[in-house]
Amino acid sequence: MHFTFNFAPLLPYWPVFLEGAWLTLKMTVLAVVIGTAVGTLVAFARRSRRGWLSRLCGVYIESVRNTPFLVQIFLLYFGLASVGVHMPTFAAAVIAMVINIGAYAAEIIRAGLEAVPRGQIEAAECLGLSKWRIAWHVMLQPSIEKVYPALTTQFILMMQASAMASQISAEELTAVANTVQSDTFRSLETYIVVAALYLALSLLVKLVAWAAGEYFFKRRRTVRRAAAQTALAARRRAAMSRTAGQGAPGANTAQRSAP
Image (cartoon, rainbow, N blue to C red; front, side, top):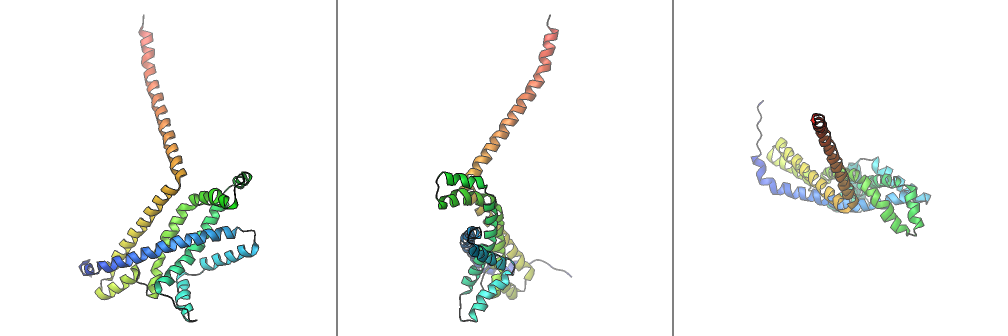
């Protein structure tokens, strides 16, 4: 069987592909921003001394993490419609993504909060800082810095999971691909293009997350700069030691040859 790649039939559909990619990116950005805020609140509530609040957040987290994302979308879109609550496909997809990423982000951020030394919090309390300032400056910022790589990975996974929104006819990238391949009958080429676009979007999200981390986590830059300066100083000392060691034999020879 002979097969040749032919991307020419897909050229008229490039605007459609780009519109689907833009919708995917827009859904991801909204879900990440709102979902991270929800996850932060849930992470603090999960550590609350109020038992009922902590248990309620635990139920939310375990319910989301132990059910498929596709089922969650269907519950919001089809389940609510059966009781008279109708919402647009875009809104249903974004809300489902927010609920999902909020649960995962809550556990990631809570792990970072648990890593903050208790003595550091007690020292802030002794200085008379308010609870909000302690939560923001002493607990949340160092925690986010520690778990930022895990959060970034979760953001990318959520963007890829947005393909599930095609099952409720949201015109994101995967839904566009399904339409294009049914029109052109070039399934392999269509999904190669879609895979390349998802790869580009993932790299874009990773780049933006890295730039945001470099901007907000100034201590990271300071530590990296100090480590680079220390390494450079160590290399210079090593070079000076080698130079001194190479010059010593010549000096000794000159002393022995002197009358």
